[in-house]
Amino acid sequence: MDFIGLESLPVEVIILPPSPGFRTEHHQLLYEVQLHALSESFPITSRHIYAVFQLSPASFRSQYLSGRAFARGPQDMASIFTKILRYPICTEEVVEHLVPLLAERGLDVKASRFDIPKRLFRSLAPKPGSIRWKEQEPPLLFLQYLFDSPGIPKPNVNSHGGYALTKAVHAKFIPLIRFLLDYGAEPQCKNCLAIFVAIRQKDLALVKLLIERDDSSYTDCLGTGKRKRRKLEDRVVVNSAMLKAAVKCDARDIVDYMAREKGCIPDMQTLHMMAK
Image (cartoon, rainbow, N blue to C red; front, top):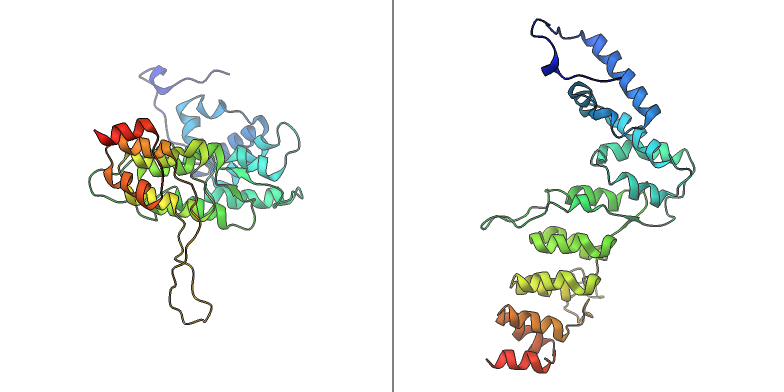
């Protein structure tokens, strides 16, 4: 069946709004058709149908995603969440409705870790001027839910070669960077790409945040409540490539930090660059 847009109707035609009861039954019928078809194109066949699915409840969306996940046969819990989280309609509310549906299938929540979708971080960019990121901004709240919810598998924080951390560093989203590091994000992914991004930004504090471990949660064993600073092993060993990148960017404070504090020995080419 071909759907036509409003612009193709004769001028004489007057479209009366349906009654609330008709609208509800009409929407429910479309939802049932979609749950049977599991079609990606059906919701965009016309502007009217698109508007109907834009207003669809979380309960319907969870059923649709569940159907899509199992369309090709049985899946493990981690694979399911890797797939469904790629859909922009998969919000916290949808996941809340989805968990009971998956629990009915007897899937093991602790089986393995799922990949965090790139879509959550793709649009991250530095804030203009002196505006700083806040903890309440997306995607941090949704990530906190995914990591802390007991009813779903644990996310793989280093999915896609550490894409999340690299994008967070690019955007200078400090609360998100700290969150990812606390949950095991590894700056050495993709040959330490996140660190090189911080170096190119000439941000010494950010470079230190990525390289050095935070001991702020450590308290002394006597229970006095006083903080004791202890030497923790760095997440990453500073190498000559990082030092060379800092020299090329003329990030002198980072060069000094890597050469003197971290004891990184420059190669001959970097030495010549430093001597200029």
